[in-house]
Amino acid sequence: MTQSAPSKPTACLALADGTLFYGVGFGAKGRTTAELCFNTAMTGYQEIMTDPSYAGQIVTFTFPHIGNVGVTPEDDETADPVAAGMVVKWDPTLASNWRATEELKTWLERRGRIAIGGIDTRRLTRAIRQQGAPHVALAHDPEGNFDIEALVAAARGFAGLEGMDLAKEVTCAQSYRWDEMRWAWPDGYPKQDAPRHKVVALDYGAKRNILRCLASAGCDVTVLPATATAAEVLAHNPDGVFLSNGPGDPAATGEYAVPMIKEILDTTELPVFGICLGHQMLALALGGQTVKMNHGHHGANHPVKDLDTGKVEITSMNHGFAVDAQSLPAGVVETHKSLFDGSNCGIRMTDRPVYSVQYHPEASPGPQDSFYLFERFSAAMDEQKSNA
Image (tube, rainbow, N blue to C red; front, side, top):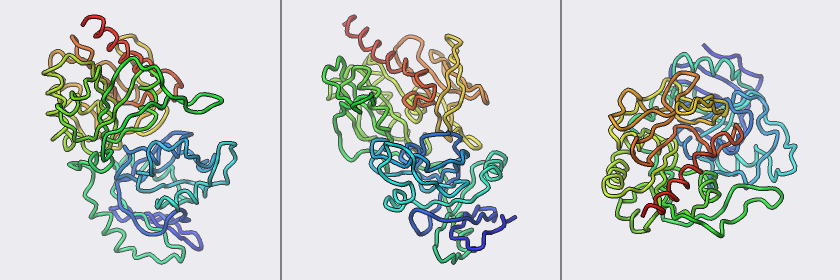
């Protein structure tokens, strides 16, 4: 089953089952292999490509107008793109936005990321939903020379994300401080100069806007590498501990992250807040389990119900694994649930300020539906201090 090729295809996407999609290549030249997912967001392609949670994945964008606002360094979620590649319906248009400093095509080429346009993304998305996230190889050659057998073999040879610890590949090399707050008109990103709380953030692939939200909630943030021990965390004398988002299989990252979190929970009463992979790490530390999803949740329009209040939040999501709510032990309750498929989207301990969510409250698709989670974390630290 092969999509009809344009007169001069310069890119080819090969699925492990032998399906081929031909199109127009842009960005970097060469070949890459990864898991293929789709994202339904209508905005934020730059933030998606630089989100460390997309390590090991090529992103199919279901929204056709990709490239229309260009790129700007202010919107990078980390120093370099992390997603392995990009698949779009149309060849990117020229940027039309006052904030743009560069075209998407040149940005991808300069950053070493391969992309393909002219693809029937609806058909590709249906295939992902029906068959699960496939392993693929993506090649870009301006001359249009492709070794199809080698591409399919490369796709079949991709190890997959199950059992893969990618947090070590995207985490920071050393600790650093963060004081930049959320973007505000007209001056951009202000600095937090009057923090109330000291927070240690474990970087499993942290997005910059999460750190900005913590700073905006009154936190002086120190970021530590994913492999930091409990002793290293507590050496900073924090008022709270934050567990970041990140890529890969939570069970693999949990080999070293879960013992650290357990020690924090067993030896302190510190408030703990986790997002995405941090949510999964916390669930594992509390005795729960995680499972690989068929095609995951990737987009900025996912409705999530807060089971405590009945409120429905429009959320941003990016995960291919989920916490199994049925595995949660006594003393841990489910707090949020996806209204798309009923999968778990949040947990908390019943007797301590320890909680987490699967979605991304910092991405603000609601736009401010979920910022209360950061305020809740700050309020928990306020309460801990008042009771000390």
